[in-house]
Length: 269
Image 1 (tube, rainbow, N blue to C red):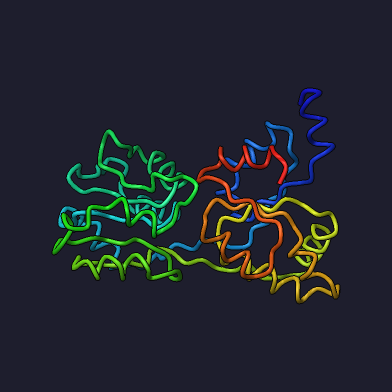
Image 2: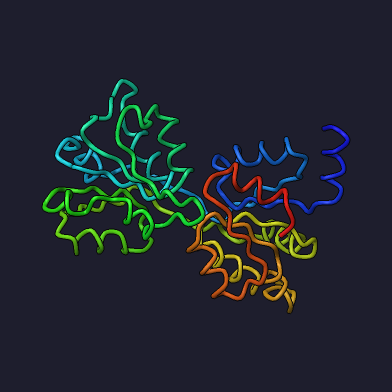
């Protein structure tokens, strides 16, 4: 750490990354290289569905789909981790993803624009299902099959919109999001973070409700109010909307991707 990085670390609050540990590593490394102290405080965990006949059948029938939509990097991982290493994606089957993190997840498995057509929102300031929908050629997909790979919870906007356009949609649950147990260790940690006024990286709107629910269980009457005053950094427009609806006061909407989060965390809120 050089002198400038030491100054940054002394002046800036700790950055709390609320992703599962294996998904926090890349952003954590970027931040620590930039001189920011980090804390990984997972507010959700990912559980693959081991017995998943529907997903296995979709893998076998992949060539019958015109498009496969992965709703998140977790959906990408759930798909490719069931495959043999020699398996290749058919070039005629397009892919759609919501943000830069999902594109990076595809790249981790050797899939990029040189192999297959990948659709994603061109406006990196707003990456959600609505903006992804505007990138798709809905008339060309009419009466064709689209596969939607998703979690066991989440909005049905994209599936409903595609069906409204007379597109045949098959939605498959590939993984579960699980809220960790709010044990004594987490209670102690959360109370310390609230009193320290940290910067929070929030990459799922569901964790906002978890945070407020956990704060309400602390033996600290102002815990919820203190949480609502924390500085949030969110890479998706919808997460920012939910944060505002839940009473959070300091919300920085960043572009999609860890590098964009890093840039936002290096400048004042």
